[in-house]
Length: 291
Length: 311
Image (cartoon, rainbow over all chains, first blue to last red; front, side, top):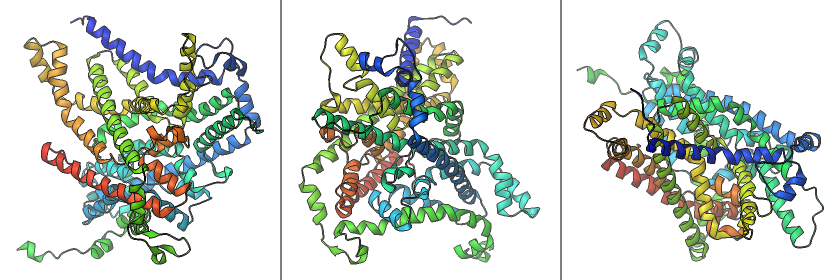
């Protein structure tokens, strides 16, 4: 049967294409501007069609941007370590909750669930972080808020519950303990869902600036996202000074430099994007929306 | 008879029997204890004039003064209204757009096109709000922004969006929909894929058009999913999206009238004004309202929708 191309179909293709463009074009604009010579931006504003291209902004970024590179490395380092730890912590807890030999597993699940719907909020959280010593150090970026999420716990728990119990029983008959069963049987079998939550955690770490804004003030601990945020607010502050006649004397990064910094920040996400969307879509479907 | 023989297993015995399994719970349980349960006692500082040197046990009690201060200020009504208004607008428009897109994609048969479309819709979801702020600046920036460039090209006068609160409700809603529509669409699409093909076949035999199938089968069958996602959002209606608002608006006071929500207000009270007790009072109110909303919406879900309750 040959499918006819009706007017309705054409309209659907049209709408879907327009939406796709709306999703991608703004990002493309940032990308193009980062390659546009500054003089042209000043003359014509941001444009999709610059008359010439230049890599001046990126050169400046790598030549003068010790601070940017430091922040970037912070983010890479924190994201790498954090994601691995977060996945291990979540997987281990999920195993215990999916283990039918653990009689109190439902009560323990409740213990995790309660804090999801009721907790003290940002003020006590902030005070506890200060008290425990998560401030002005790398641990402040690594642990609070990011290293464990009960939502992911339940996602993995649900997945592990579907693994046939006979596997665990026979392994235990052969003398394996829970650690061996978890690391040798359950975790390898749960690879799809662990990849999904790994990506969730990874994105959360990479995109985080909450911990930076709350818990660190020294520039050497900034993550790249927080650096970008600071850059923008300092710029608008300087502009206000200038427009009110008081000329700020500091170095003002050019428009293309700002956009180049944004682009290198999106870089890893774009590179990992094929995995990201595959595993996240899959994970959402297997884990069920209910989580 | 066997039942009587079985002794009740205490938690202690269970731990002894499954040492390794319980050991694996420790990091997560500890984290939840410190950052979840330990926050609760701190909530009493809402009733104190908290002094960091005296701690939560010895600070001066002031009763409901902190609450009074908040509710008597003119900010209270504004930020509560903004929080709820923005959340409802976000929920409504994201849902409409995502459902329409999911039904449309379902009508497409080219796998290739489907895949590319889905991937592009999801892209904004993975960007941080900070990056979105850079993108936004590229579009509406007063000096070089694309939109202002287009406006002046057609002979209009440039608009300084960062000084005009009246545009910001729309800007925030558009950005939220832009960022979230992909994820919501994926959920709806997954639901649609689970529908019974026979329904559509039967409809086709009775001569229904594709449009009729959409409005009479697909959309009605999506209603449980729509309801469930809405219930989750309504449970969080008192929680403003701090990450979004602060990344986009920052400390630009001119825009507060349209953009300030409970969370940004608490943040400022804590970090800029430096008054943890007042901040806690507002956040206390928010936690209680939030809890009631989650409970209430879940109750409704359990009553009205099959398997609708989240817990």
